[in-house]
Image (cartoon, rainbow, N blue to C red; front, side, top):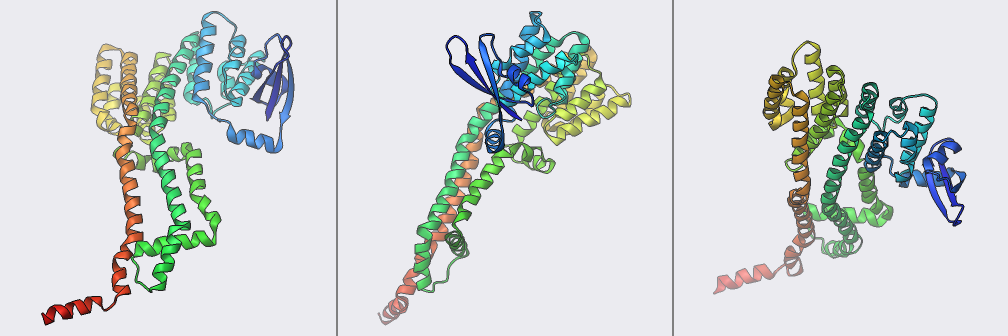
Length: 419
């Protein structure tokens, strides 16, 4: 349930409104970050208003997650109580769902529960890798350090995702404009050409017939013009689910320009999680299992699952890496070399951090060049579409001369023979 909290400043009389995703008024006040000099008025957001709010608000904000853990880490380092550390983060949160998280965590801490137990109530926001790290930090007494590690990893992820999104702006605009141009032409130019070609009973190419049929469909059912934009909207809205589908993941990783980005981004997440778990003294079997769950791509999930099987059977980490290196693609041998050094020197944590840093650096460089990588693909797509339209619309024009002057060619040939 969404709660609307109006915070009225008792000195200035000004009101600031915050929306909190929670089921209790007291929790809503905590999530809104009420100050001592403010008076809170809580009301429910229900019905259509709630639907609009939920559709428009971000369900998962990596920026809020990074800010939450970074702020909590700073507070805990200065011996501020756990509950107070979370309360102080409320005003930093931009989304109602994370304000609700803070409210729920504070309530659970007051009831005597651990932070890890409270975070497990939000599996979509905090995956098993985050809760396992928090639990390990609680048990080892290193909660501030663990929170710093999570915040650092989230900030790097946010940075890379922002670069990827910026690189996708140009291709997205081209796609939308292309669809819009085709629809506008179907309503304006194509019907006029259809009347011209139809009156002459001309034999038309398949591409021309196809675009005329499409235009006729839009003229009889204009609402279908919205379908491409709805499909694009649904595609981008559900991109997370599409990207998580194993079949789609296997397709993406085989695309020349996209595949390396997909592979390195998944490897960066998996190895960073694995290195943080090992550094936090989590059992190796558990660390590998959680790294498998946290890896976005099916290949890396399979890689870590196979590692767990080998480690459970008594094999060493370096040997297990060597057996399953094919899942890591072209980087497999290099990583196996690094793990062999780790086995000989006893520096598994440092080597795993080095692997994660290398992947993140490569991904950062690729993200900075994403516009140059996608530009050829965008140009090819645009060229194919424009070429198809030109061929479909103008190719019949070159044969109109025979239809308008059917005997012109025969007369010219006869004149040539006479001479």
